[in-house]
Structure formats: structure tokens, C-alpha cells
Image (cartoon, rainbow, N blue to C red; front, side):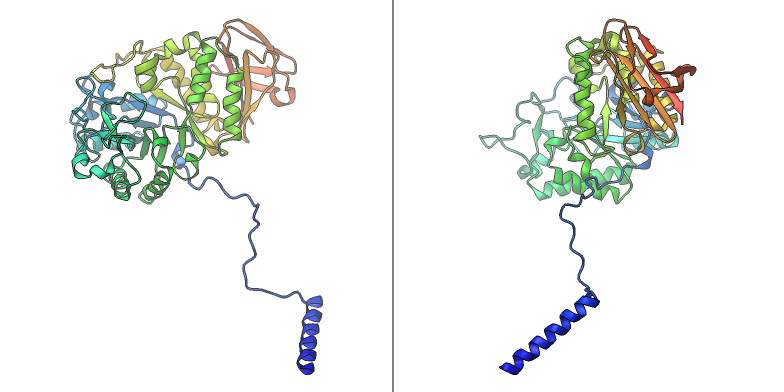
Length: 467
């Protein structure tokens, strides 16, 4: 017993002696730092989205014919306008049971693998996508994953794929007046597999470039995360969620809606809020969303146009400034078809109601602003663009001012969001002083400390500097 103890002591002393002069080596992996920050965003935005603007096409109203083939002739005009991502509202056959109006809502999908004959054939859709690609543009389809039409064949083939009400019957989405649809139930794995296969079908078959996903927040996030990876395995896609949530940006979606921005701008234009409403939106954008998260900014879309107000009704005299801010601030602008023509009415949603096309100052403004965006890297989208830096000014309740700058360019933007003329002094001299050219005419301007800006009601100034 004594000998064994003595041997243990000698060995122990030898080990300790070795430790004093030669640190031990180990093949075991070093323990991870538990508090080390991990990448939150785990998807890669397609390179072609870096300076793109979106354009929403309501195929039914876009041309007198209301077809994909007729829409092809408008593509050169859209390219000249400066948009790069074309969003086609749902292209599928529309349900007839409980249909709204004579033509129905395109969001009541009867066949996820079919094309609405009102718009043309599968070959017509392919021709539109190919023509858009030839023009250097990309096409995304509107996808309705949350619900189907009452007479979608899935109702009879797979009734277990549908949600039920307290009586055990099929039900529309609760609390909405969507009586022409019934909800799907994503607790079912077979439904998820079917929907993923349908999403992949259009990428493979029609070479589309991604999706705008209707009420994306009503569908489980883990489904979107999985299907995004499967789509990217076919080709890099762009995914837009009709929802506001930071978590959608992590693995599933490149872009989310910015309803909060729209509502803030609408309250300001109506005289119901000051520019602090915008402070709240942009603070959340920079602090609560992932760095470089792309948000879609708009002054109209199919919902706003159909049910609430035209761009003119919503923003009045503030419309040009609201449009300008949607392009030069952090975000990606959307144009709803007809905006650029100064469409004066709300388009019918369940009936044929073609847009009356004409030249209009709104179209000219968008064209000039999108050209500025493309040519100014500080204004690019997401991770490619520069963050906004607030410029303190002497009229903080009425005047919104900021800088965006990178290694190539600096943009100084000053907006008078009030119905009174303002004289304003920019207080951050070191941030703003220098020589600029003023949008849109590129007139040279020097900004010096304590120089006052004169701004008419609802006026703005955008100054650009090469660095």
C-alpha cells in the first residue's frame, strides 16, 4: 500500500514538473465563447437586388387586354422608368365558389400549378419572364400560401390540410372579410411538402426569380426558412414578405414591408403628426432590425389603392416629398402600376378596370429619383447602401434631415414636412459642409456652417457629393 502511494506521488510530481515548463497539448476542440455574437442573418441577398426598385403589376388592369403577352410591350417603358424587379400579382386560376365580383380576387387560388386563362397560358407567362430577363429585369410571383379558394381541388383531395372553426368546418382567415377563401393548416407535413414543391415548380418551369409572399406572417416561419434554402439550391431567389418582423430576415426573406413608414408619412401629410413619427420608424429600422435589412417603402400598392386611397388622396401636397423620401432614405421603393401615369382613381379589384396611360409629373419624378439611386452607391439597398445619419436642425418638429455616405458618395437630404415655409439651419457642420450638386439639375451648391435653408411648404432638397 505504501509503495503504491509513493509511486502515485512520484508520477504526480513528474506531471506537475512537466506542466511548469511545457504546457500540455490537447486535441480536444477549444470551448466556444458562450457570449460570442453569432451571425443573425444566414442568407445571401442576390447581387442583382443591390440597387433595384420594385414595380407591382396588376395584370388584369395593366393593359387593355389584361394579358401577359400584352404586358410584354410595356417592358421597355418600365426599364426606362428605372425599375428592375417586376412583381406579378397572383397568376393562378381563381376560385368560383363564393367568388367576389364577376372576376374574383386573384388571392383566391384554385390551382397552384395552373395559370389563370384570363391572363394567358403557361407559354405566355414564360415569354413574359424571358422578355423581362432580356431587358435586364427580374420577375417575382405573388404567392398565397395561407389559404386557397373554396373550390381548390385540395379541399376534396386533402381535407385534412385545412384549418377548422369551432364547429369543425372550413373557415376563412379569422377576423377578416375574406369570405372567398379558407385557411390551410401548416401543422400537416404533407401540406408543407406540397407547397414547397409548388414554389419550386415555378422557378424551374418558368424561370421566375422569387416570390412576394402574401400575409407571410400567417404561415409558420420554419416553413419559410426551409423552403428558402430549397429554392436557393435551384437558383438565387429574391423573397419579399408581406409582413413586418425582424425574424423573417434571418433565413427566409430578403425584404419585408414597411407599413409603419407608410402610416407615419400619411399622418404627417394629414397634419396629425410631426417628423418624430419618422424618427420612431427609422430608429426601429436601425436598432431592432438586422443591419442591412431591406424594407419596402411605398406610397401606394394594390391594397391601399383598392380599399383606402389613391396616392393623391393619401398624401396631397406632400406626395412628391413622400416619393422622394421613399427612394433616398434607407429602404427599397415600390411603384404600383398606374402611379407613374398619375392614375386619379382607385382601380376596381374584382372587375376589369384598365389603367389609362399618359405622361405625368409623378412618372418623371420617379424616373429621375431612380436614376439617382442607381448612380449613387450610398443610396443602394440593404448591405450595399449607407445607413442614414440624423442631421440635427433648427426646426426638428417640421424638418427631417439626414446624410447617407460611403467611400464613393454622400447624399444630404432635407425635407420640410409641413404646410408652412421654413428657414432651417443645419447644426452638424462637420457632417454636412462641402460642395454638392443639387438634384435633379446638378446645380453646384456649397454648404457652409450656419447657412440657412429656405424651404417652401412640403419642399425638399437633395444634395449629392462625390467623395
